[in-house]
Length: 224
Ligand SMILES: Cc1ncc(C[n+]2csc(CCOP(=O)(O)OP(=O)(O)O)c2C)c(N)n1
Ligand SMILES: [Mg+2]
Image 1 (cartoon, rainbow, N blue to C red):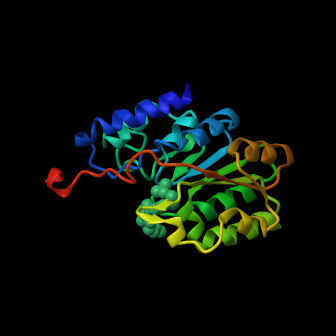
Image 2: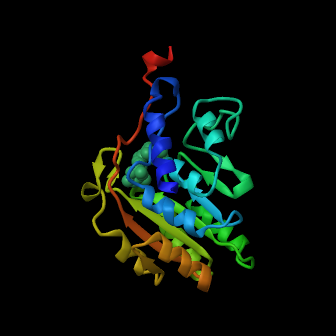
Image 3: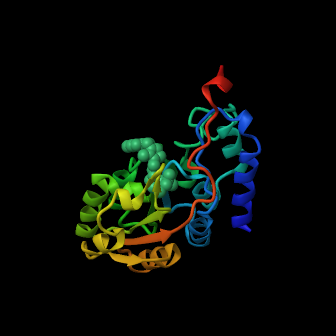
């Protein structure tokens, strides 16, 4: 059901590109992570996302209508049409996304520190290129040191724009995360359930294939 909602939403965007003047990163192929988020996270749990975020937002039970209007730059949009697709925020459901690769990794760790004594957890989704930001490794040290209730989910589609992971990374991601003695998983759902039960940090690397272009963007000629 949620997977279908996401797939239909993204395909509808693909069919309306001529009305969209912000860059959009569709999540076709990434839906299974969204399903795990939908099945496990509560409204008060925190979800941080990145430029490819529509599936995360809809899985957090965000408003389909407000997201649609936002991407179309309307006043009725989630952030009054100012955020576009990439940097959306919905404080009502503790959801934030950023266009900056790795931009919210440290914020997520800080949030986990702040909410440690509540019953809620923090989930932070990143792409494989997110692990190439130094803040990711600094944050792993921090969350392990303070044993924080946070899950980093890496959606590894092996690509950073057009660069394949083999051209960018010398060593696989999960073994490096394991060296921090953080529990690692291949399933987002299992990682989230572990974090909820033991209130300890976890990491999940999900290998995916993106089933669309990296980005869709109206050309400058269409804009003028
Ligand atoms: C700090 C920073 N550097 C570069 C970019 C340009 N950029 C936008 S998307 C992207 C690729 C990101 O790849 P990944 O995190 O694996 O996510 P994917 O698009 O594959 O889902 C890059 C380099 C950016 N947005 N922010
Ligand atoms: Mg990628």
